[in-house]
Length: 360
Image (tube, rainbow, N blue to C red; front, side, top):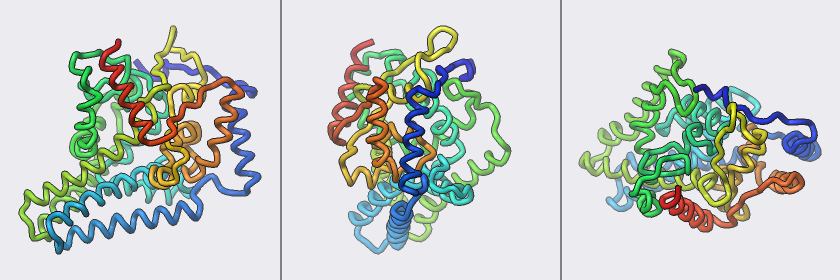
């Protein structure tokens, strides 16, 4: 079945999103600022990329004790996650800059750290942002069968313990991503309900070319230049990904698989009961919005509601937009789900996983 058969309700000019969009546009107009990256965003980009390169080059020297090398690997893994969250994510959405060339080049950072920007556009920009939290549609909740992320998935006995063992799988997420996930998704004929059977020829070369470059930079080259046994270098590579995978998994899951957001399915004729924007309000949650550290590090994904409504706006503006969205949602009787702290969001995620493991 094609995703085109799933239809959201149409907006009228007096509905939630047209009103909200007008208010957001007014905010930027009155402030006389761009919706794209500002000076603070450019500075953050430079710092993250610089620290990433420094940690990588220090690792290549190999002039440190084993424990320091492992700490550098962990730091590089976290910085890799920050590149994805803060730089590549905005660039692939086209929100970093008005200049498409700038977005294109910054999108390549996603490939340099082992992922594939083309498949991310399909899985994230198109599928996840359109069919958020819809079982059978949204690939973000259609994970390994041993993890039940939605009530639309068949429940197994082992799911009763998923709220415990899921944290053993999260650190492995990016290892799977760079070696398995992109290839599997690229060659699947359908992702959820999305027709994935055709790709430009150039994307085959980009997929294998950039993957080969990543394997060279982070596996082959370290084995060539670092005077350590190969198995210690492999251990460092794994440590890098454990920290990267845990960071990314937690931030992504805390926005949708927590208490509050629902997991709706189309009704008769594939029709959804709400407009697309209202659907985002019912399926998305914010967390740690008052934390300056979360705002700095998480690429605006703790303001997930604002991001889903306005993916074309750079995340550096989401905190300022949040009161506008909250007020407008209240006026239209829509939810605005939020966990006040990062730890509170993790606790909510655990409770949902526990419930999904025991209830149908």
